[in-house]
Every structure is written in C-alpha cells, then in structure tokens.
Amino acid sequence: MDSRSYRDPALMSALTTCLQDWEKPVSIMEVCGSHTMAIGRWGIRKLLPSSIRLLSGPGCPVCVTPMSMIDQLAGLKDVTIATFGDLIRVPGERISLEKARAQGLDVQIIYSPLEALKIARKRKTILAGIGFETTIPGIAQTVLEAERQGISDFYVYPAFKLIPPALKALLKINNSIDGFILPGHVSVIIGARAYRFLPRDFGRGGVITGFEPVDIMLAISRLLKQLKNGDCKIENEYSRVVNERGNNKAQDIIYKVFQPERALWRGLGWLENSGLGFKPAYERFDARLVFSLPPLEDYIKSGCRCPDVLRGVIIPSECPLFGSNCNPAHPLGSCMVSSEGSCAAYFKYERNSNEC
Amino acid sequence: MCLAIPGKLVKKEGEIGTVDFGGIAKDIALNFVPEAKPGDWLIVHTGFALNIISEKDARETIALIREAYG
Ligand code: SF4
Image (cartoon, rainbow over all chains, first blue to last red; front, side):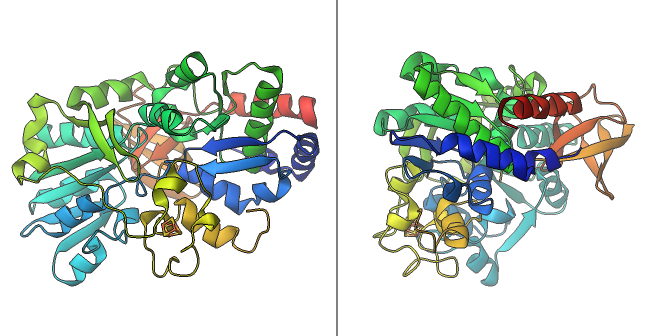
C-alpha cells in the first residue's frame, strides 16, 4: 500500500497553515507510544503554535509496568523468562532482566508469544505478559495453543493493561486534558465504539489516527475543530485499518481466556478493571499462582517524575533529572528506557528544541 | 510496542498464512481474520494478523483530506 500520500509535503504545509491561528491554550494527549515516537520523529511540535500543548499519556506498555514485576521475575530460579525486547532493560527496584541474565537467569527475547510456546516444550517458561489490547489477543491465542498441544510447562505473568479504563482514571486525576489522539492499533481490536464514554461521560473528544505525519496533523486539526464548535465526539481518521466494532473474533479469544481485574499501573496506582487476569478454567497457566508470587507494589525511584509525565501534568523536559541524571544510557525510570517512552522520545528528538 | 505493520497475504494453509512484508516472507497466525484470502492486505503484530486493511478506505481518506486542505 502506498503511504506516501500521508507524508505529502504540500498537504502537510496546508494543514500546518490551518493550525497557525489557534490562540486559546489547549492540551491534547496521545496515549500510544508509537504516536509519541511519530510526533517526535516528524517534528510535529515545531509545526504547532505555542498555544497547542501535546502531552504523552500512559501509552507505552513498558512505561506503565510496575518495577516490582521485574524484580519478581528476575528473582526466580530454574525457569526461562520469555519477554518482548522492550522490557529487558527496564530497571526493577533491584535489578533489570538484562542484569539478571548476566548473572545466569535464562532470559529469552521473543517477537511472537508463539515462540515462548516453542521454548516451553523444552523448559519451564514464563511469558512476561505485558501489553495493551493490541498484544493481548495473541497471548490469549497462545494459551489456547498451549492447552491444545498439551504443553504443561508454559505460564504467563498477566500484567496486561486496558486503555479505556486508564483514560477514565486519567480524566478523574487530571481534568485539564482537552482531547485525545487515540491509539491506532489498540483500536483495531476494540473498535472506535470503545471510546464513546469520552464525549458522553466526560465531555471530551478524541480522534483515532495513524502514524504518518498527515494522520497526526489531521487528528489535531479535527480536535481543534471539535473544541471550537463545542461538539466533542469520537472521530475515526484511521478507517483504512480501524472500524467501529473492532475485531470481534480477537475480543472473543481474549475473554475466553482472561477476565477483567484491577491492575497496578506504574505511576498511576491500582485501577479497577483496568487489567486482565486468567479465568478459573485457565488458572493453571497463571505464573503468579504457580510460583506463589506476591501482589505487585508501586515503586518509583526518588526524584523520577514519571507519574506526572504519565498523567500529562508535566512534559519530560520539565523533570529536573531529564537529560542530566537520567538519560537513555543511565535511565532512572522506564519512560527513559523504552524507545516509545515519552522521556526517551523527547531525549532523542526534542532535547534542543525551544518548543518543548 | 503496539505498532503493527502491513503485509500482503500470499498463501494460506489453515490458520497460518505466508505474509509478504516488502520482500520478506513470514508465517503469520490468521486466527483473528479467518476470512482473509491471498491478495488481502493485513495489519500484523507479534506474529498475528489483527485485521484486513482497506486499501479503498486509504485512498478515499486521502482524497477527502486533499479536498478539505489541499
Ligand atoms: S526524565 Fe527520567 S527521571 Fe525524569 S520522569 Fe523521565 S524517566 Fe523519570
């Protein structure tokens, strides 16, 4: 598919011109790590007038994973930890998985959860179950495969997170957010209708959009138009990929294996029904039960302002440790580790910009 | 971490498909898109196809944007 039209310089400049006259201060939040990266990469902030503030919310799965989960996994013995690459460098309170590996723990980086199943055929394996609605169906399907193939030594540590409950919690903590750029690939699964509560219950609008520069500029321009007209609603600019209902088949598979439970979000605390745990019929796959792991605790390194970054209260460059004591080579918080973390994206793309 | 990438389904055997990502072919699970057929564009994440992409929608969206802003 040709995506060049979504990078068309003429279209970008037309969209940029349209936004220049905006005077009233507004805060727009994106809740997707890939949008965070795209905004940095395409230099979107520099194209906007100073009245439009772009904030990054809790949209990076690694950034909202409690550090105590890392410590728990890193402290296990005689088991292989299978994880997506983003998690491995995240510091726990004590240790990262990368350091635990150097000390002898078998840690394997996987691209697909199905690879963890292959490893589990030979060795007792725990899959670090992090991710949003985009990643969860694949892991649910992998559990069904483990059952079908009779693989008994495969376990998942369910630390999944759901976006709609997080948006609700966020608006209760920080009501200065005027509108949302909604995630593209989470929405493929849950559909545009999953956000109807935003205008209905909170009077906020949102635009689901893609990852090209035109997509992002268009989402901003549509949100501003909604604000101007006092007509907040959910719009889907990414209809080439996202539909109204989402993928029902994938949703059925998720809820065959998992059920909602309260979840601990790093920096946001425990949020009701914002995560997924195993249904009783699949509990034998739950690493927390099988390995008797205690409930997670929230722990933030002293001075790290990640909770405020994730809530959209500050932007990364407003953290006193940003760039000095905390940088990608020596990260203090996971927002500086994952390439999708807002602190890391700021460090890479916007450090020298006056705009941020 | 939620980034999904588009690829074209070239072959299908049961619930596994061969998907071409600009010259690199990979086996992808089709459990969530049982209706996909060779020639369809899929959006793929961690080895699973999440949905079928509409090329028509992409073209229509761009035409509408051009009309409004171009
Ligand atoms: S810059 Fe570092 S210390 Fe500051 S909020 Fe970001 S991750 Fe935490």
